[in-house]
Length: 268
Image (spheres, rainbow, N blue to C red):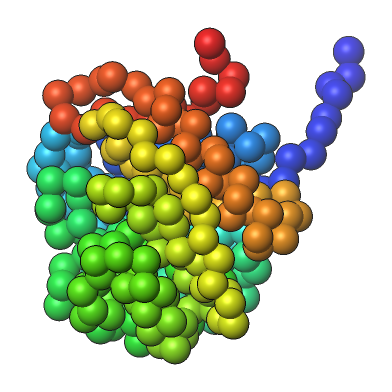
């Protein structure tokens, strides 16, 4: 019997690996699959973490990262790219060099800086290097409020503060900026700045402690929808709906902040 072949749209994540499966590479690949895409990965760091704590971070040597990137782009170029945790300036430089060389489209950068327990996944001393060398590659930059505060030096207390931070990050080089509002107590509204206008993505706050990997999942969902050919506004809206559903149907696993449910649409 001859095989029946098919083609899926390829999409790539460059990020750290989460052995507990809720964040990082694992969350991204689940998100890609949930959107019917062919997920690929470049592992930047091996993170020993679970829902309660980060134990250690081991960075992959830059040459190995460069080889992974080459292996993907010379064979199956992705339609979109999500970039997550980058721990060292050496890795930042490696990724930046390869982005400049391969020129991928639809780049979503999630500036992962802190784990849920406050562990610094991007050492603060590397923040300036990140801004100078990677920010301008972002078609969409997706910081949460603490990350936006750290990247801009601004204090964010409300929606106008989120707008100021988005403008600042756009001026620093990001083509568009989504400031995620999940850390606000009064709402879960996000602020998006496309370089000219502001757009508010409304979201109802969902009461749950199970939010491990939500930032990774949202940025991967944005990349997924861009790979599917949606324009930026539609991609953001669809990704917002997806992460809201994944949080609403979150999984009560582990002793800390449990993971979201990436396949809530597929499983009862």
